[in-house]
Amino acid sequence: MLAARPATLPAAIVPVLVGTAAVIVPHGIRILPFLAALLASILIQVGTNLANDYFDFRKGADTAERLGPVRVTQAGLASANETLAATGIAFALATLCGTYLTFIGGWPILAIGALSILSGVAYTGGPWPLGYNGLGDIFVFLFFGLIAVVGSAYVQIGGIDPVAAVAAIPIGCTVTAILVVNNLRDTDTDRTAGKRTLSVRFGRRFARVEYAALVLGAYLFPPLLFGLGAIERPLWLPYLSLPLAIGLVRVVARSNDGRTLNLALKRTGQLHLFFGGFLALALAWPILIG
Image (cartoon, helix red, strand yellow):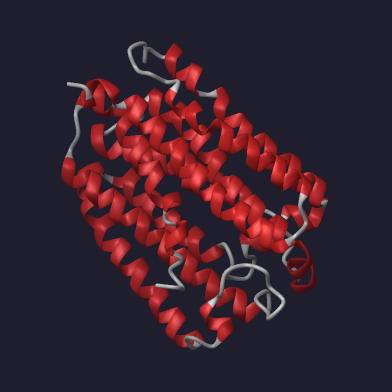
């Protein structure tokens, strides 16, 4: 459970909620595909966390100097082989869910599932790991934002929905912000290990500007959803999380302290959950109020 990092699971849950909520008013909900998509997303997130634990240990990125949460392989709480086996189990279970979803949604869902698992491994593993070459931000935005939200809507209606496509962008922003503050915190240890995140490549100031742009930029999109015909939906709901967002931008802009950034990381995950949860509520509002 420690290696699975339950605190990161909102990154897997929120996109499925938002993608499903985007199509629930005009099309209703298919419960079994929703549950399968939710479980598959969670399992891919867990598998990715376990893979990161394993490969970062093998590559020397996880050391005693690391400021983040405990990594079980580096801490000796599990052997490397045990962590690798757990990674395989998580991805295998995700594949079982994906088999059902492929039956429902066809080859696009098969492609999404295969690419998601491949990216989860390739983030820190393989000959050219994405996270070590400055591509982590892009792939998190794509797979935990755009693809996850649009794919969740796709298994409901069998097509791409414009509301889901727009809603995916702010979700991609807030989930990528989690990675940005994580990389900001680990800039020094990542540089030593040869992990060239954007914070290592371009410096802490760039990471802080990127964080602010992602967090505050997410709030530009609810009005676009209104313009797509969500007239009766209270799209002001996501703005209830704005005070937390502004506070986090201020903290991240000023702090180099590991403990403070750890707390900012945790609260950025909460922001992602609150913003996404409120957005899903807004999109599904007519159904919820009967």
